[in-house]
Image (cartoon, rainbow over the protein chains, first blue to last red):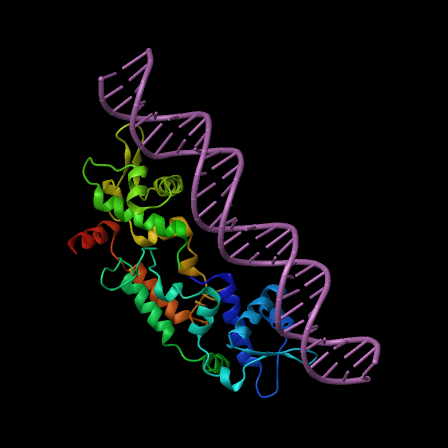
Length: 134
Length: 134
DNA sequence: AGATAAAAGGATATCTTTGTCTTATTTTTA
DNA sequence: TAAAAATAAGACAAAGATATCCTTTTATCT
Ligand code: FES
Ligand code: FES
């Protein structure tokens, strides 16, 4: 489904959304401990997300990762595309050269439905709020 | 989504269903050429499927792979489980230790829907017939 | 019986993903 | 200004997935 990298990244972004806000930031170390994932590995993923402006970061003492106002609309799809690429959304699930409703493979309609259900999910901050409420 | 192995295996089984029947069998070499996948690699996958009785094989000249009567109800789910294991059907998409509707991750209901849509698909031979009709 | 064809199985090579470690760079604080 | 804290970046290691090659076993045909 998703690569391990992508799973880590999604969970990390949700964690950032849930535990930062205003001036508050959270360090890579703290996130890694909370999610129980390898710190250095996660750090690279966070850097990649930051380079693509899906999350924000600030260096130095008291720095860390956070969601700036311009990150409030970041979606799960954005994170997936950033880490795993667009394959999940565009490639045929069976590896056929093209994926299209013109000449669909037996899995096409099922993958299409799944794709769309992910694309229609709400923003990361909205998802994080939902989790908190439960 | 699926491993490359699993994609090869699914396509191969569909190909077998479409191109064999009665006494007719098809060799690994022929399948590999038709699907444009590495022959020796595919052969191992077919052996694995045969060991688990999802497909049938016979050795020697004129031998090959085919679907015996007892293979007629083989499903896509069977093939996926045989090659990739049961993770797609039981593990949390985000890698959380347990996947359950009790404490669902934000992706849970979406993955659940996808799982069920795959589980409810028809048998491999039925899918192969559908393809032929189009 | 011998030759041939095909699956079965094992050993090995290559590539990708995942994980670790070390060093630089930037920022805050004393 | 110096020390400390944190991200950024790069080199390297380990594990897993993918791919190739070679030998063995089994069945068929002449
Ligand atoms: S054609 Fe296979 S998933 Fe679209
Ligand atoms: S809990 Fe994450 S997919 Fe079920």
